[in-house]
Amino acid sequence: MRYLIVLLWVSVVNAHDMIPTYPTFTTAFVPGVLKTKMEIFNKREDVSYYELGAFDSEWNSIPFVTSYKLIKMDYLAHAEFDIYIKEDDKPRLEYICSKSKLMKDNVATSAIASRICSRVK
Image (cartoon, rainbow, N blue to C red; front, side, top):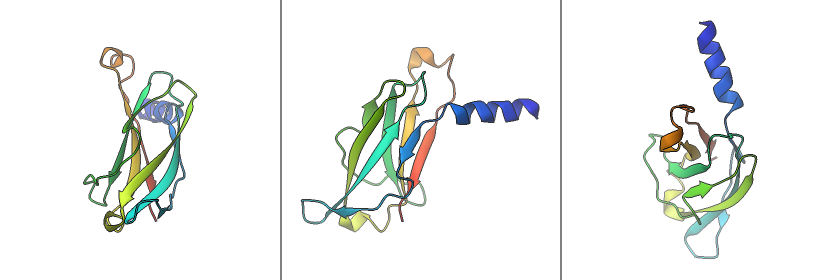
């Protein structure tokens, strides 16, 4: 049991952050499209890439548009990005997530991927 607690503590310490926790959408410049601004903070020295995703309550992927669905970030760097979705998809949207992408040659030293999700109101 002691090892499980240590493993969970290490994974929390090494996780990344994404804000806001509860994003709100505004009308974009294109009719029928909504937009929200998000920010991600890389607190993992062993991870340089984060993948963005949008999901419904059943974890099915929802189509969205952003500048980059895969963000390259240095350690302790911040990145702001906009998420655009169709107004028709907004009622189904439940989560906007970022997931750390582990480098193939670095998996032996860092086998814990982290996923951080913001819940849409």
